[in-house]
Amino acid sequence: MTSTTAQVQVCDHPLVQSLLTKIRDYQLPSGEFRRRAAEMSRFLVYEAMRELSTRPAGVETPIGPARGIALTDYVILAPVLRAGLVLAEAAENLVPNARIYHIGLRRDEETLQAISYYAKLPDALPPESRVYVLDPMLATGGSATAAISLFWNLGVRTIHLVSFVAAPEGIKKVHEKFPQVKIMTGAIDDQLNEFGYIVPGLGDAGDRIFGT
Ligand code: PRP
Ligand code: URA
Image 1 (tube, rainbow, N blue to C red):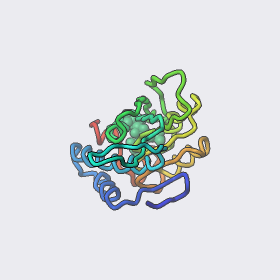
Image 2 (cartoon, rainbow, N blue to C red; image 1 turned 45 degrees about the horizontal axis):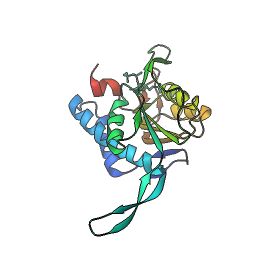
Image 3 (spheres, rainbow, N blue to C red; image 1 turned 90 degrees about the horizontal axis):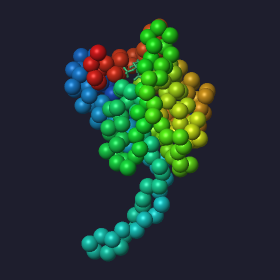
Image 4 (spheres, protein in one colour; image 1 turned 180 degrees about the horizontal axis):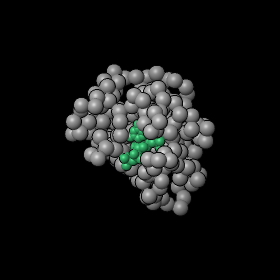
């Protein structure tokens, strides 16, 4: 894996990079996009979860005792609707006990501001919470920053962001406000265009996964 900085990691695994190349293709049909995006999600989440905390835990095999580990974090998955659902499904299979808090955010096409339409979070979260904000596209960073704020305001300080493609503008915005957040992404692309789309990106992730 290429470590761009301690806080931003680009997953350069050949399987991830070949999947990303496939889903960038504008001719890839929607069903195929979903299938490839789901595969890529599993690998990206797997890499982002490398830092999960553990404790030693013994286990009895049919032959005798063995040393093992148990996960100790209170893992929270926070998919940003809609496109983040593809990452959430993959993450949920890897960490079946994780709590899942869906974050409804829609980008206003004119202002590019993230508008909240759904968030149902508890009043408090345990100190050992580790949050994974899941959103395939980090463009202006408005949606990611809004999602991260929800958990930051509840006292959570261990927060990761997992994306397929990130724009430099989005990374900057997230880290200006939350320098501690660790970003795992498939690529850092060139820039945003005048409509706030990532160039070259992969288009509108929600539309490509679910349809317009
Ligand atoms: C897309 C994408 C991100 C957001 C990124 O969602 O899935 O959530 O845009 O842009 P930003 O970094 O500039 O905020 P969109 O608002 O199109 O909603 P959708 O997933 O429901 O289509
Ligand atoms: N949202 C997307 O789905 N794609 C982009 O390029 C930017 C925002």
